[in-house]
Image (tube, rainbow, N blue to C red; front, top):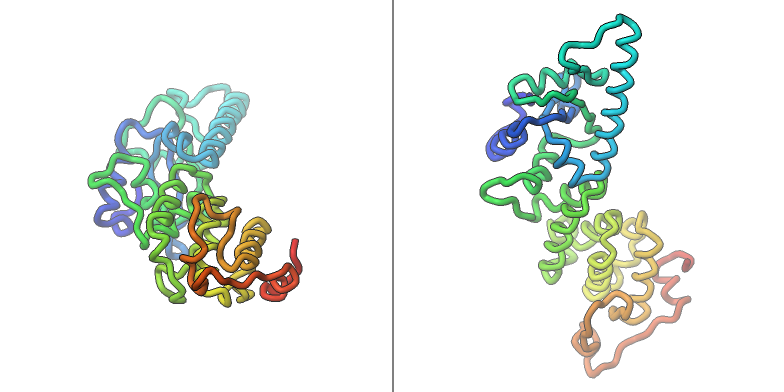
Length: 278
């Protein structure tokens, strides 16, 4: 089980839920400090597979590997391990993590979680289990949900994050370094494949400050689809037919008093972006 010094406060309650109902999986997280043992958390294969196709695939591979290991051991010494509880090469670590929980008759499979911290995983797990009070998306955990939701292919987690951004779109601003800085969230939404919300963020970025769209460091890493949407928004002075899912009068946009606004041709837009158009 994970060390008490690592898991504190509300996270202890979440870990308590992870250990209920006969967990059959162990997730292995690298320690924060070099030389320290890995942090191990129990889990339930059905829940993990339902929420994440990536973890579901890892579980299938672990089960297959475990079956192959059993066959090899039988050929080597002619006997099967007691009760068939033979896991993968990390069985010892898995057994240590599950020793104080109910483990079913199947092998305990250990799944490594490289690049993911225990704290970040517990932020996500809070949405997967019936935690009281229920988990909520906040500015403080939004990045974790977007990054892990995309990394582990968790559509439901991404949907929570997308809904939060949509509901707080009017609060996004140009205060660089702030929690609501729009260019902090736009690339994350793009990377997560949340196209509709990404399009709305692009539209708001252009409305707030068109010059911000010409900063190379902000454009670097955006997908071609996001760049094309940005081009269209710039070309229509912040009003993008393809991006906006509902009708908004152009006169309501900043800098369009009396319905007059500047339109950019493709060459001007390319110049603003500092790159060739797709």
